[in-house]
Image 1 (cartoon, rainbow, N blue to C red):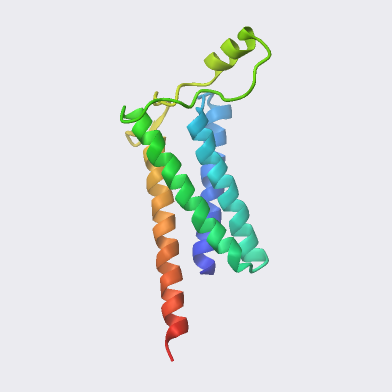
Image 2 (image 1 turned 90 degrees about the vertical axis):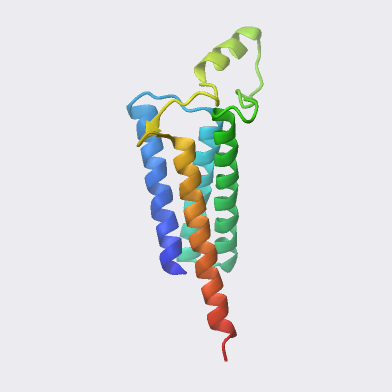
Length: 152
């Protein structure tokens, strides 16, 4: 289990570093759903650290839950980008005036537009594959540990 948690933490850290580099280093804007996927990586990293450092079993379950949430957000983001779902993810903060709303509206890219790709795939697809891979690996590791504990 420790190797899986370690891998989740390292991949989360790498994904965060890459997304911050692309957004702030290269100037590519990120939409609301991109930021939600990033938040799932932040929580995954924190859960990984808790699971490794403090040996808290609940942190592993929180990590699995966070990975599942990240996968769901990625699938929804893909559905928005490919036109299967409506783009409802414009900025949701409160505004003082119509001008501040218009500024925020044009600062954040639409979730339906693909702002950057890697290997020809939108990042939402790659995030979904990454979250699903880590989640599957986590369930396999957990299942193998349960079967080891149940054997006489």
